[in-house]
Each structure stands twice: as structure tokens, then as C-alpha cells.
Length: 73
Image (cartoon, rainbow, N blue to C red; front, side, top):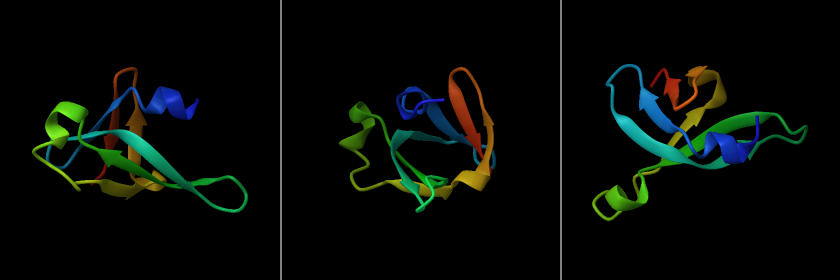
């Protein structure tokens, strides 16, 4: 899967049900393995939630579906 495909999916917290936005960046280690993902509210909502990036470990990803990414956060 490409990063651009991940960026088109909403990130949803399984614990709260909140939509955390979409993937805007990833952190990788020296070997190219994904360590963490960074989500940010969508552009419309970003004016209300400036600086509300959410960083979570790739191991927190429970499921990557066709429209959403479910995380244990």
C-alpha cells in the first residue's frame, strides 16, 4: 500500500469513536520500517483545531479498511 492511499482514509479511534483526521506524515526508521503515523483534522476542521496533530504508533493500527483506518487509541 502506498502512503498516498493511506492519506485518503479517515483515522478513527476505536476507544472514543472520534475521527482524528487523515494521515499527513509518517515516521520511519533506518531500515524503512514505519514507526508511527501522524494524523491531522481535515482542512475544513483544521481552522477550529489548529495544531491538533495526533501521533500514534503503527502497532496501534487495528485495521486498514477501504475508507478508514481504525486505531487502538
